[in-house]
View 1 (cartoon, rainbow, N blue to C red):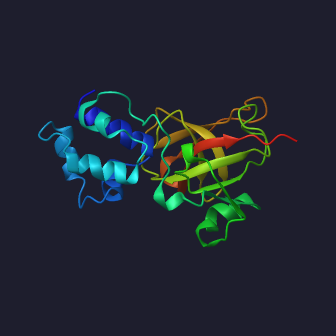
View 2: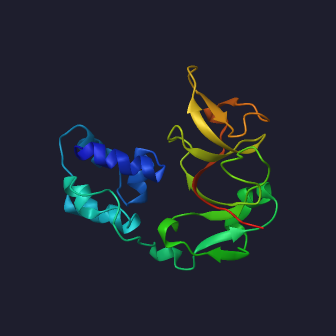
Length: 209
């Protein structure tokens, strides 16, 4: 993989646009990254250090040279996530629209996937058998302009809050929301502009009775 391909892989994994990723790692403008895309610059040690400061599970050697693997062999947790992933119990709509002002019921400590904004309980059976009702889903809020097709997201619009797999459709500006339980639920096409908030599904904890 060339320099830009590695950066693009990290940006895609982070669930951000190029501009949002640049802002996240403290760059004043995304042009620095586009210079790498155009082949005019390589990945500097300073840029690699910026990336692993915010995404410590990424391997520094891989960023710089492509040698080895993208992720560290040992799980690394974020400094700001020492308490764990905030878990909220209650109405999903109320949680999603106001969790940043709410006090978590508890914290979930999972060092392997600690880069999450919240955990909550899955309601409904639209994603069975992949995700059972009552399972705890771990979510990371991402830029609505950057979607990795085929991934599962909690999609927030003015009308609905749906956990679905997202796919593109031929019509420009449209997205297809696909449930796992296709016997009971239909796929739904929506306008990309209708998405108010977007949360990438980072993990699932199955709760056994």
